[in-house]
Amino acid sequence: ASLTGTLERGLIVARKDRARRPARNLKQEKRFLIVVEGDVTEREYLEAIKRSRQMKSVEVRIEHRYTDPVGIVNEAKRLGGAARKAEPFDEIWCVFDVEAKLTQQTRFGLRDGLDTALRAGLKCAVSNPCFEMWLLWHKANWSAWIASDAVQRRCEELGITHGKDGKHIRDVGSLLRDCYLDAR
Image (cartoon, helix red, strand yellow):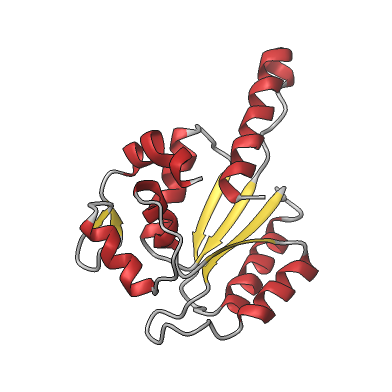
């Protein structure tokens, strides 16, 4: 299941519940924790989905201490465990890239991270080669292999991203509104 599809289904169920029940008996929306490695692009995109779908129960955390999939998964486990007693999350997602940024090689710890997530009952959204590939699909039909640095350049050329490192999404609202179905 895709992360955005799961979030959309959670919202649809919540809307149906609101239509059926009196206000005092509203069922709380599903709570999602999404742990990402990216400071900018992933956060901007996921926060825009959260706003556009009016989902208040999605928490996006950016993981700075760990740059490998195992570290990201372990941090998601830690955060999920800490929330388990007070307000547990219904779903916990880890978002990371397949390719290492500098070497263009498969990420160290990719298989271990996926195995750890599976054993812990966490879900993973793995972008191959990088998250910007998902953004590129909003504007271009691309099926050939491409390295992450080339994907990032292509996103800048198409006006999808901009900024110092080409990490900021130019108009994430219109990207979601006008191009999401093409990407999907």
